[in-house]
Image (cartoon, rainbow, N blue to C red):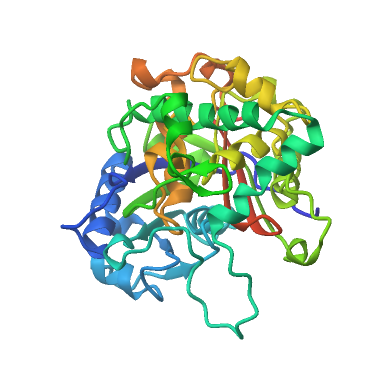
Length: 398
């Protein structure tokens, strides 16, 4: 790939987020105001101090006007972006590149989705007009195909694998139980998850991330200016984005045990950040666990586990909060919530924000913080037709 990266040229200096949940009493404007207000306060800035805004939403607004109206911005550039469920990450990526280019000193990336009022439940695709020949499988159905493919390819007993992915859900619920902004703050054991009714293949409803309303935001500036605003910035080490060409949907031999776009984005991000052994060099990762088999495959695509060994590492507790490489200490989409589109990518980053400098509350604190690097991952689409973002962020320059 041809990206050169912007390593150590941009820093995140403030973040804010609403709870991710069903906000029956809040509108899109309210959510944007709440998330932006907390973010401004986090960096000690006001809306007028921000030079430009990148506004991510896939389903809840069009153009930059809704953000400008909600925040009462005066003569500020607002760019609305969309990239499936990776929309929030796309807003962050573009804001960072704008600051790195020298075009702006400060920028805000902010995302929002307000979808629960419409009855959107996440199993169906975004309603885009088409000629009627598009696939009709739900997202859950598409991702459920991972389990039988993985079991067959690597010789894993399907019943064992079923409990392995249930353990992923249980882990993320245990982490999210300590996240005050999480949509689902109840721990769930493996037996209870496996006993739930199936919604697709062997996936139960508890293998699926819940769709939520919510907003999240981040302010970025030049790295050399970061300590003017905070004593705990997060420095951007890598930002990688890959869009697949959709050919997997046409390939009868498509391999459901890997998401090629995620693997490619990770490879590029590691090259930008100078990482050669992610499992040993990263302190933590927040990944896009839209369905439990997704997280299993990502452990291998992101280089945390060898091919065919991810399920063993899950069972061994490698990715638990106290494990060798904590994954989704904030609860992941499964527990934290999934405002599908605009807010999820920034919410994923918010899982890393409290961990910087080892400052997370004790119940959420990772034991690997001294490594100083966090990975965030976001995807959108379906197996065979996907976009993927991988970002790497650090506590220090160099």
